Amino acid sequence: DAGVIQSPRHEVTEMGQEVTLRCKPISGHNSLFWYRQTMMRGLELLIYFNNNVPIDDSGMPEDRFSAKMPNASFSTLKIQPSEPRDSAVYFCASSLDRVSDTQYFGPGTRLTVL
Amino acid sequence: GQSLEQPSEVTAVEGAIVQINCTYQTSGFYGLSWYQQHDGGAPTFLSYNALDGLEETGRFSSFLSRSDSYGYLLLQELQMKDSASYFCAVRDQQAGTALIFGKGTTLSVSS
Image 1 (cartoon, rainbow over the protein chains, first blue to last red):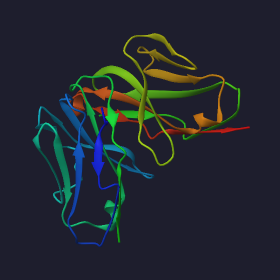
Image 2: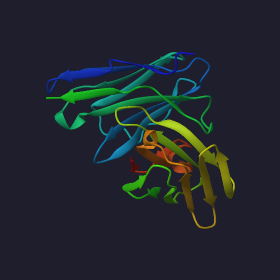
Image 3: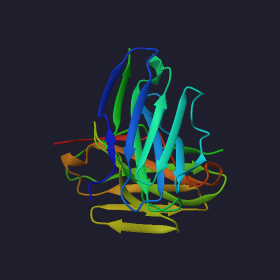
Image 4: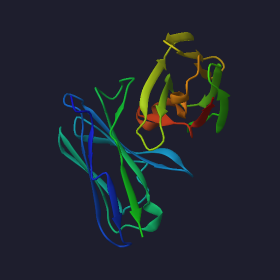
């Protein structure tokens, strides 16, 4: 299997622009997680889906952030409008199910908002 | 709520043994996981403890004491390639059973 796939790997944008991050989980995995990693705050859970349904979005920082999972093989995380403080590495991870012990992380998207 | 505490940095030399501790507070505990992340890379799963005791996987071992809300990762025969950040994580009932990660411990192995 190719593992979790994320795109783009790097994104540089200007404040106010819309940013869309994409994720393809491992085939057969039913749970998908979006994390944000910064030096200050560490690895933060933003939102997670189980069987394409959002289960917990309490980590989404504010209304500028939204996430969708239209099918089992694709998810997006959108930031609109983006701000410099959104600069971080965004990871997508998937697991077999919501109680699986192991999560498999994608390579991440390094976002820089100028 | 939930919180995890682990040291921010640990240094050691090749061939040595190092222990990275983790204490946690959760509203409903299921198990303690450990992940490794090399600089610029993604976190990768190392181990999981649901029950008290020691789990061994090659040079790495992980320990859990549920009564003390404490665990550790033990790395033996350290190699330069073990230089990385190590995260403990718990599955928390309040977070809908998703994993919550500690801030990570940066391990630097020197020759």
